[in-house]
Image 1 (cartoon, rainbow, N blue to C red):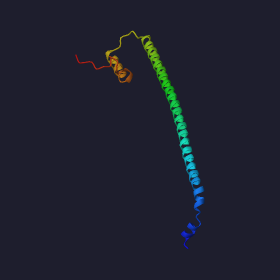
Image 2 (tube, rainbow, N blue to C red; image 1 turned 135 degrees about the horizontal axis):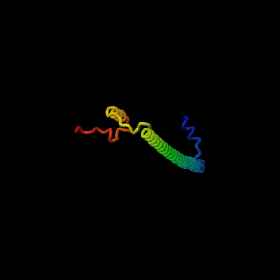
Image 3 (tube, helix red, strand yellow; image 1 turned 45 degrees about the vertical axis):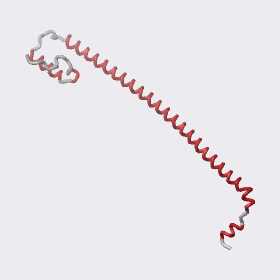
Image 4 (cartoon, rainbow, N blue to C red; image 1 turned 90 degrees about the vertical axis):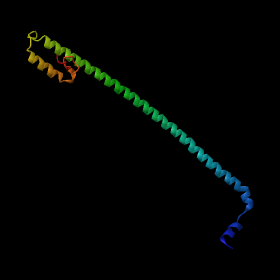
Length: 133
């Protein structure tokens, strides 16, 4: 008798009919429970990750807003300091001894030309190219 015949000879059809379907149902139930658990766990993990991402985005938005406000505030402070310095310099020049004495045209033109080379004065009407007369 071959190997296959011995296996078949030991096969109890009545026991298989009794317990076989129960064994198959138990395996299918365990498989369904495992798949269901993996699905639910994956959904919870996705929701948790989505929540973490949303929180990180909110934190980044708040930090970005703070940085922008600080930058604007710092720029305003610098602009006020520059304006104050300009007013103080203008007052000092206009109130210096001899400020009312006329300046030679050559010195005046050279002074204006040197100021016009600075970015702060380029838009000044005295710095714009005058058409030849």
